[in-house]
Image 1: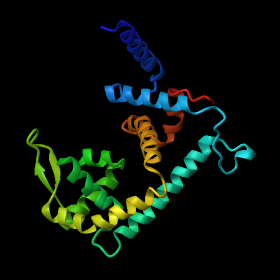
Image 2 (image 1 turned 90 degrees about the vertical axis):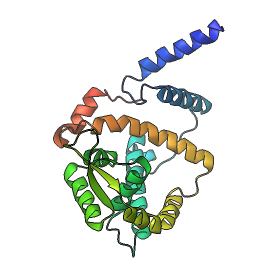
Image 3 (image 1 turned 180 degrees about the vertical axis):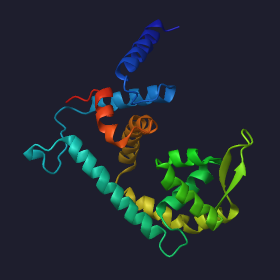
Amino acid sequence: MNFTLLKEVINLLENFDSENKNEAYPSTLKGFTAWIADRETNSVHTTNEEAEWEGKENGRTPESAIATSLVRLNRYAKTYSKSAIADSDFTTQEDFIYLINLKAFGAMTKMELIKKNIHDKPVGILIINRLIKQGWVQQTDSTVDKRTKVIEITEEGKSALEAQMNKIRQATHIVSGNLTHSEKMDLIRILNKLDHFHSPIFSRHIETKDLIETVYKEYSFQKN
């Protein structure tokens, strides 16, 4: 056995545990390997490779630029999604996103479906009820707990989804813009890292008025 390699792996695990106190990466093999990949990627870039953004010369922070870009990109994506469902029976983009999740991941409870889409319960229930009324999803008793209802996509739902899938795929291609394959892979890793950070926070359903203060204190945000 190569004990030198074993020591290096153990050292990496210790560093991972130490640097991952905020759980930006899941404490799994996938999380560990993603952390290593990010370390290697970061080591390639030099400190001179500074990005440019609007307002930088006036002291605008990179965090501000990131937040603004995410908001703008979300609006662009929503606009393309609206175009993809124009002249169809879909009311909103959330309708087909709910159906896509049910088709991809199978039957689940209402709350599981709502949480997967990061919606508040009242909003999610409205969407699910709309899909039930359309005949695109149906409720059945859970085989685990008869008191619980599970939601699953119907054949009519699959047909409605398939009828729009070509336009939906076109919309997703447009959203990716002119990124190269390598850039897409980098972006996926970065977005996954952000999602792994925010997901456990939002699953706690912290009161809106307390959200920023709670997260800021718990994660001890400091300037880099």
